[in-house]
Amino acid sequence: MDKNTKIAFFLIALVIILFPYFMPKNPEVVKEPSVQEEKVLEQPVEKTISVADLSVPEIKIDSSVVDLYTQPAEKNITIETDLYKAIVSTKGGVIKSWKIKKYKNKVDTTKIIDLIYENTKNLQTEIFLINGNTLTDLFAEVNTDNILLDESYKSEELKLEFVDNEGQTLYTQTYKFYNDKYSFDVSIDTTPIFENIKEDKGVAVNWKEGLSYTEVSDNGKNLNREDYYRETYAKVKGEDYLNFDDNDDPEKLNGSIEWGATRTKYFELFIYDKENNFDAFVNHPSSADKSELYTGMGFSVFLDKKSTPVKNFNVYLGPMDHSILESYDLEFESTLNWGWSIIKPFSLAIYYTLTFLHQYISNYGVVIILLSLLVNTLVLPFTLKSYKSQSQMKKIQPYIKDLKEKYKGDAQKQQQATMELYKKHGVNPFGSCLPTLIPMPILYGMFIVFGATIEFRGAEFMWWITDLSLPEIMFTLPFSIPMYGANVGLLPILMAVTMFMQMKDTMGADPNQKMMKYFMPIFLLVLFNNFASGLILYYTIGNVFRMVQQKFIKSEK
Image (cartoon, rainbow, N blue to C red; front, side, top):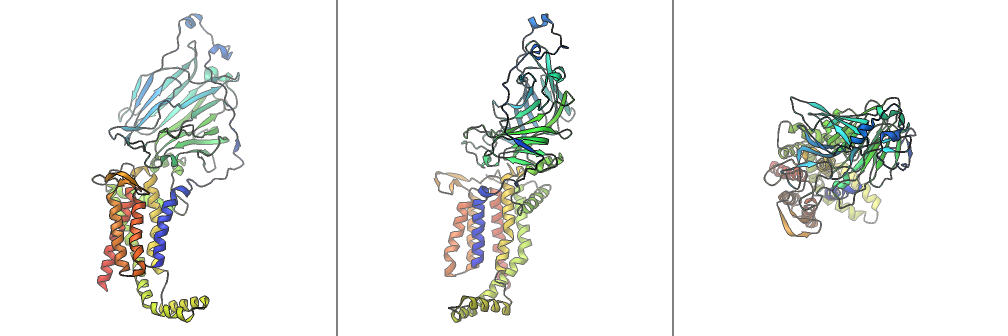
């Protein structure tokens, strides 16, 4: 292995180390003048009121009803479909639980994950009145105790009538759930109080506290730096989306807001209005303590009063699956992280190739092996040229040595003479770098795809390798080694061994490269031990391929 190849290996390691810390999560977007930003105004004090406080003359209150009526008790309404099991509270109509059936809990794999963290208010409605009061967290009467959907019964409505202290309906909120999708429809009918709603941003829909983390291990450690991926988004019609992280202050965006979103590593919430759009958006930075197991990051969207008392919008709460998000035709898929713009085409190509092959091969580990073999086969012509270039370089080494002695005091003449020598013998000094440099964008793309693509979450390979998106753990040491950790995996060891054998075969007995031959495999063993096992499997198969390739080339000589 020549000097350029060593440098290439070092760059691979260096970039992989620094990649998660310096990679821009999303392209920076310049906010156009059409989107007005202002600091969030202080919200009015929440207060549950009665119809009498509204001064609506057309509503008549029967005193006999007032004497007998009491507020309804809180109920939890269960909604179950083939995709999820949810709980909606009659207090405020908030979502208290949203369990996704397809994805298992990391702590207890007999359980499914819940995207809602306990005691958080999600999909909370606020209605702002002209007298300064706010309607929120009211109790509702409902039309059903639970909803069960399947192939034969594909959709159903949950109707919540929110009432005042005297039993009069103030507004109605209707949810329509579907068996075959993670989204549902919402309709808010404010007819009884319509004349008392503020003209500007009269209705707010809040999801302020984000989503639960789902990648927590049995010892409470977040295995995949899930907090790194949490973000909030706003999509303004006709513009690119804006993204907010926990370092951003609250901002209010006025304009035609198509959707607001908040995400974890693998799951995302969208509140969207494809037809009429929202009139404003506010991001809410994290309110959660760092020890809490939820993002604490969310947003609010606002609807002007306008001319209609009925407000319609939609909610998506589910996996960040590219094909599902793309099907909504609202650019939801743009919130997926594919890396730098120069790497994005490689990431997408890898993603589409892996998912295409998975249609025919159920085991993603086998798919990764095939992809590694395919990539290394495509690079083979460049590898053969590299070996030829290395062989030519060895032949002219005595001449280069003579030139160094001849022009020892003149670096410029030495360089000119060396380049003429290369030209005379048809040698490309950079030819040996191509097989190393060409796969690098693919390797980075693999790093991204395995790190944040939900298809590989929980993807099994064989034996104890049950999640190709996580580091492999064969057994755990009673102590931790700096950088390496306490977990020991077989694949990282195989990767280091095959790399050593490959480098030994390439370098031969060259004493100048002896240290590199031992250093690089050990260094990458320590580095890769905590990477996704799918990435290490891909790299290890590539090492084996190149070993066989070198043996074959030598036998042909």
